[in-house]
Length: 93
Image (cartoon, rainbow, N blue to C red; front, side, top):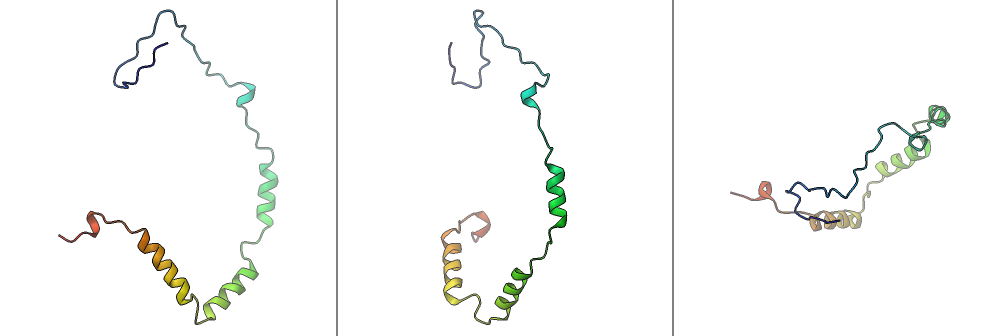
């Protein structure tokens, strides 16, 4: 067997190589089972989309005049500055 690294060329098959044909018919190993999906849908429909403990925590953060802290803001600003890239849109003409 010869491996050609030039992908622009059409490979020539040696007559000693046998062509392998793949059957398009699905086999038993191709089958997919979704038997548990109805159970999951049932569980999802009974769950509340609102979590009171998270709402209460968010209200507390909003009421706190020091949130986010200066330290947190500095860390976020540092991360943003570290990931800035200079591109054509950000360069002045």
